Amino acid sequence: MTTPWVVLTALTALAAAACGGAFLTYSTFTTRALGRLPGPSGLAAMQEVNRAAPRSASFMALVFGPALLGVVLAVRAVLAWQGPASALVIAGALTHLLGVAVVTAAFHVPRNDRLARLDPQTDAGSWPGWLRSWVAGNHVRTVSGLLAGTLLLASLLV
Image (tube, rainbow, N blue to C red):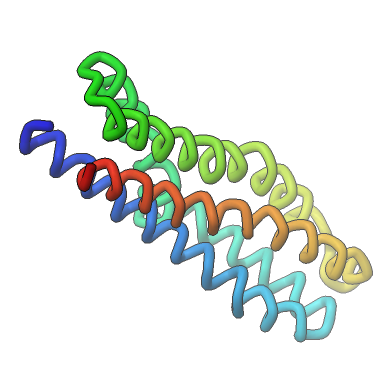
């Protein structure tokens, strides 16, 4: 792999892993703390998190940047096949694309949109179930981001 591709692969790997790390914080302690709040407070706090997340350029870059760059890297890996290194690039790119970007768009965004329409005072009873399903999906994003970063970095070592 030439130097620009090595650098792009390394940066994409680091961004994917950082994304997985950001989701890890939600899976391990942020959502647990929100779940301990009284229903209306937890629901309202999550609504605020969901309003802030799409407005954060750095968050959006971590979620969708590695997905877009991964597609570029995967196409290059196919066109300039280098055996196991190319296979690892493709695996890492697909892992982030499907496990982070698609899960975010297809699973979390619709749930977050439904949560945004709830009234914390009258709909708090749905909060525990919503939180459980949201966290389960977030575990997928966590593992996918970390795995994608690992696979992409591994492609530089073979």
